[in-house]
Image (cartoon, rainbow, N blue to C red):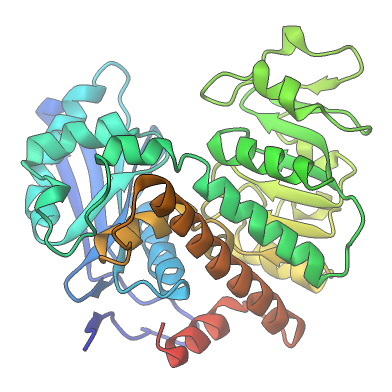
Length: 380
């Protein structure tokens, strides 16, 4: 029997407290961070390691809770966790090595900490090495047809793919069958993947925002050309844009673009109480983590805007890792394994997107708890 260790709600409507929230601090090695284990299932939990200059314990707690929910919604028997490291310029490697030594007991005890915003697979390998942790020694995990790093090169677009599936499902559910105008906030791996997929399905990408601002064209941006002038961090080279493209350095100019669909694929709190009034899209998709504040989501739903939450749409990468850690991936050749995972993600995201929007249409408030309760009744 699957054993789920998760505290009950502390108060009406409050999120339950995490099982573990601990500081990871080594001043002499520039390490300042936290690890939060929100829940355990059969002694296991998983989540990414975020490394930014502004990460906080509150942010890590919220991300760990979201991981519990998204893994529960797709039916994976593993709990949610998250780690955060405050980035210090020039001391990155030192902090990562120190982090690996500090979290070694958690890694070996069943709490998997992978990549997230600000960290790469190379970073993860670095702190794994310091911790003496090797995924291949995990007897519960699926046996992969290639090494972990090579395996992920075939799945780099999996999260963007899931966001695209959720977006297309929401459009179908809303009866929007014609080409839609799409604005994408964030042009990293997820944003680029969504842009390619939605354009291929006949939708028009009218705006893209990166760290330098927003580029837009109401007639549609040529995605292939845009990708050619975008670096790996997701920053577009403005000097190579056609003259017809409008360029704005205003940080939230993407909110003022006339679009039917808004994909949020960057940092958290992109839409808040102070800027939610500027949202004009019929459909808002959280393609990143915690993109909208709860108050902003409620205001958008009350105004008739369809909101697809992050715990439903932004699950691709987490689902793949969860499938591997829980031994769900069948032993197949590499190509068939990759196809199996894309199909698995598509089926879960499509069903959860359809059902969460159905719940939202039938009542008020956050539809996610109702969906999660339904999935648990199903035995997912």
